Amino acid sequence: MPSTKALSLTAAAAALTLGLTACGGDGGNGGGGGEGDALQFGFVFPQTGDLAHLGPPQESAAKYALQEINAAGGVNGAELPDFLEGDEANDAAQANDAAQRHVDQGADIILGAAASGMTQAIMDTVTSNEVVQCSGSNTAPGLAEEDETGYYWRTAPSDLLQGPVLAEKIASDGHQSVAVTYRADDYGEGLANAAADALEENGIEVVYNEGYDPNAPNFDAVVTELAGAEADATLMVSFEEGVQIITGLIEEGVGADQMYATDGLNDEGLAEKVDSSDPSTVSGFQGTAPDVGSDDFLSGLTEFDSELEVFQFSGQVYDCAVVTALAAEQAGSNDPTEFVGEIEGVSKDGTECTSFEECKQLIADGEDIDYQGVSGPLNFDENGDVTSATFQVYGFDDEGVHSKQDTITVP
Image (cartoon, rainbow, N blue to C red; front, side):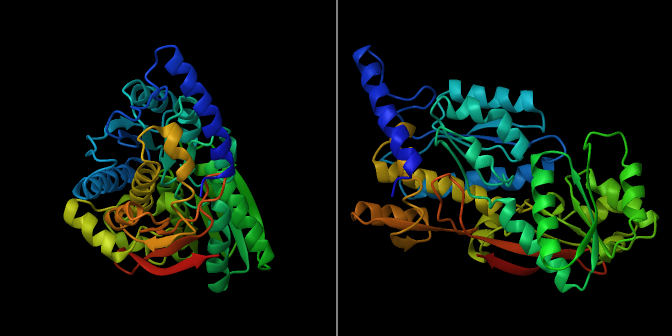
């Protein structure tokens, strides 16, 4: 079922297409390949920068999805070419340059960016050119509402869903007071405030809740404030810079079992980064993050890329590729102005299917489909947000080994 916003933009796009045809245009979108070409994906992922550990799982998941799509015969009768690749590098200018390059090279769909802030840097470039953008890791609340075109979608859940899950975990561990710190950007502030509100609703006192400059030369002041708060627990909404905060807190006598974090620190190599001589230093450290995907998916992804060590957001990125490809198949067109209106519909209110091949066959049989993502049910709303999600509780054991300790599906 096309979304409300997609219906309105499709009508406008149809008028534009007629105008282009009358003027001798090709009828395609400003950057995409249009109906006459194979569906072209691009991506803008962190290949360098302080989120570089999230690059490999997203890139591998995207390429694995492409392999699965082509193994099923591709989209609209044509196999998909290789990805157009771009590095967001946690740098707005570089990310936007990559996105513009993809648009100029005829991308129909761009996966990414990974960071919410980097998506804000590229969203207008992508969507104003009528190219579909789908991120598997943007979680900042309100991000989807910022897009007025209808071309932006995300399979990662909003932090408004994750905040309460994190708060309930901290409450279930018996803590009565929490000190919260976060990187001062949309991701950090949004998730920190969602968690703080939920903590207070659970009767837990938030004794400190302040942001910090993630580009600061050091985080000694942050550590001093957190340690001085004398809370039962500390919550960090951080990326790689959180390693310095963890190290400083441990030096101040705060135990790792009093620390909690989010997806930005869900890193299998965290123990080595905190203390390579003694990985057990992070024993008891816990956090929440969107779940990485089903066991069958992870088995297939590991077979596809045996070198992969980090899996965060891999399932969500895979789902971005599959659900947008299915929308094109449903529309019978590789033109984004045609298939963007099918993205919401293929995610709900039809016959459930769990792979591109299975869903494609149902479409060929004339059935409406409900793609059940490997990261959980998608069920997009009209803004391009998922309305339900599965989260994992991750942690580190006495030897500093990372593991998934529990899964929670909401609502």
